[in-house]
Structure formats: structure tokens, C-alpha cells
Image (cartoon, rainbow over all chains, first blue to last red; front, side):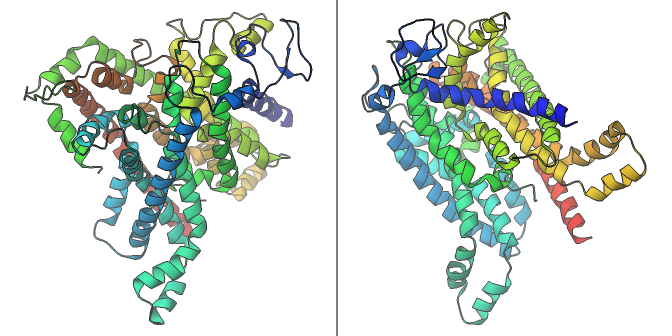
Length: 287
Length: 273
């Protein structure tokens, strides 16, 4: 039985991690090594002369070249990374603060039709970006929000809010009411009780929620692609635009840029590993 | 912010609005007639349906088998699990762009490995019959961990005493699987299928990254809208497409939330009883 299990897990593990390992290797190659018909697997410290060899000489050139714009793009990689960081962080901040407040309301007060509201909030998450993007584009033209950071921040905030409300409601539901009730008896107002009692207790939950919101705006492509052709272009849109580049797809720069782009997400995934199930199912599965 | 686009979408779908001109005229249901009469629409619909069914089915089976294999004690399990879960957290469009290098027919590593094993080396990205397979492959790589994660949660929630009772009754392994493990993990698997299904209905990122929005063999509904609105500037027609998808998604989403609701109630009952 254990043998069968090993036969399932070990091959899958290698197949699943191979693309990421290949991405990491590619980021240390020269352009010719990335598109060699003799795949280069082994980093070798010395110069490799043979074309057929599996070895290649690793180089950091691709990482150095990230600060130079690729042919056909006006700015370098870090400019677009900056856009992603600003948009990701601000929309996360807004979604988590609003989401925590909403979740507190839903968790502690009996609101008429609160269940319907909650499910309406969740259902907005199911909408395909491309099906609603047309009115958003037209609306953004009226308010000149097209091609701005603010436009994407607003949009990501509203889409992440559903995730934030659902996750935070799960966390707030688990917190005992006794402490805030004690605070209220001691003469705190609702607002003070929320700030001094709820927020400190919910800190872990807010951090976890923030990570999931950040990841979803960091990875978003549909809206970023259709609302931003120029000013506030995020990294996914930048990479997509490098396809069909006139000098050939710059694979080493793409790979090194991708490594820098996904590294924080890998780190965050490891940090929130115990909450992954909650995060990807909107907290609908309770463990 | 969430409601206005929906309403405005419906209005636009009855007009001839165009991104390149500002004159808007009401043209009644002509857009809808076009949507349903056009061959491309039926193609996009079939492609999307095929993609949703195949990707969700493959990911579910693979994820469930993995979860069964990973069940119980395995040395280094937390680390292995975390590593396996990483792909689903990464940016789909970015990673699938890199898959273009892996799948390339001439210098891609996949074909080189296949060649090394003396297997045929198909043109993954240019052969019309294989383009959708390539997109499925990337999607399966990315989302099988999701199914695995939910399956593991479902398996772990089955109380041990039921298995102990089955052991006393000398039930065979197959019997235990068929009458205990599978039915008891089914509700959560249903939830996973619904969540993945609604996600797969939106499929846009992988198509854009791997074959582009205009490729007829892989054009999903989202890619079709992109082409109509942002390449041909037909906002009105695009909105009509949008409304059709919305109806489908809202139907699936309503089923999902009802399902989630009933699961929660069941869980709540189990917790109080």
C-alpha cells in the first residue's frame, strides 16, 4: 500500500515542481541557452564549449538587464513592478479595513436579510471580469479613471471586498463576545470597543486576509489588461505584451522578472500555509 | 460599484455602442440575434463547456487520488503539501507565459524529454488539435492542488470510529472506500467542483497567454468578448455576450451559494448535536 502511495506522490511531485525549477534555471541562462535544442540542465562553474552538453554557465545578466527596458517597451521591469506593488498594497489595505468593519457588523448584529446580503457579496466574486468589463470601461471614461492607478485600486478593492468580508466574518465569529461586552460595560463606546478589543484580537485574521487579497490583485489579469494599456500597467500585462517581441521573446529577462514577481507570493504562501484552505474557499469550509 | 456595471451592461447590449465613435443608438435585440446566429458564438460556447468539464473532471480525479495517497502519516508531509500547493497561488497568466517556453515544439523541454524517451514530439502550441490540450495541461498543473487541498480536508473530516467499526465488520478495502470514504467526502468535493467550475467558466488568462484571443480552436467566451470589444470595438455586441455569460454564471453561482448554505447548516447541526 505504501508503495502505491509513493508511486502516486513521487512522480506527481517531480512533474509539478519541474516547471518552477525550470523557471529558476532559465533565469540564470543566456538567451541562446534558453532556446537551445539541447536542454541545459546543469549549472557549471566553467565555460562550456560543447553545444550538445547538458551543462551551462550560469550568469546573473538576466537580473542585471531587468533595469534596462526591453526592445519595444518604454520602461524597465521595475517600473511595472512598482505599479503592481502600489496597486496591490493600496487595494489590499482598503479591502481589509472595509472588510473587517463589514464582517464585524454581520457577525455581531442581527441585520434583516443579512444572509442574503452575504451571499450577494460572495456572488460578485463569481462574475467573469470580461463579462462586466464593458460597462466598467465606459464608466471609467466618464470619470477619467482609465489608465490610472486609482481606477485599478478601486476595482480591486470592490472585488476583494467579497473575499475580505467572508474571511473576516469567519475569524470574528470565532472570537468570544465576552471581552467586548466587558469593555462596553466599562463605558467604552462601540467604536472604542472595536478598535481596542476586536482589532488586536483579529490581527492574525486580518493579516491572513490581507495576504489573500494581495495575491488576488497581484495576479489579476483581465481588468488590468483591458483598463490599462499604458500608465498603470501591472507586471502580468507587461509580460503578456512581451510575447511576439520583435527581437525574439527575451526569455532570460522574462524568467528572472517572473522569479522576482512570484518570490513574494511563494513566501506568503508558506507563511499562510495553515490558512490556505480557508483562503481559497472563501472560508466556507470550516475545519 | 458592483451593481451599476450589471445594469449598464444590459442597457448597452441593446445599443450599437462602439469604442471608436460616440453616437449611440438603440437597436433593439439585434445584438442578441447576432450572438445566437453567429457560428463563432456557438464555437466559443462549446469550447468553454468542453474546457470546464474536462479541466474540472481531471483536476478532481487527480486531486482526490493524490489526497488519498497523502492521507495519514508521511514523513515531511507539511513541507511536501506546501510545495505542492504553490502553483495555485501564483499568477496564472505569468506562469502560462512561461509554459510557452516549456511547450515549444522545437526547443521546449517537454518535447526534448519526450524525445529522450523515444516518444512522439507533437507541436503543442501550433497544432490545432492540441492547443486546447496544452491549455488544459497548464490548468491541470495549476489547479489540481486546489482539489487535493479540499479533498484532504474532506477525508480528514471523516471520523475514525467509522473505520474502526468497518474493521470489526471485516469490510474489504474496496467496500470501505465505496461505502464510507467516497460518500462521506462527496459534499465537500461538490463544493470544490462548483468553485472550480465557476472559475473555469471565466477562463481568459491562459487562453490569452498561450494561444491569444483570436484563435478559433481555443476561443473561450471571455476571449471572444475581448476580441469583439477590444479588437473590433463593438461594445454593444460585446455587452450582449456579457449578458449571456452573466446569466449562465449567475445560475451556477446561485446553485453554489445554495449548496454552501446547506453545507454550513449541516456543519452547524453536526457541531451542536
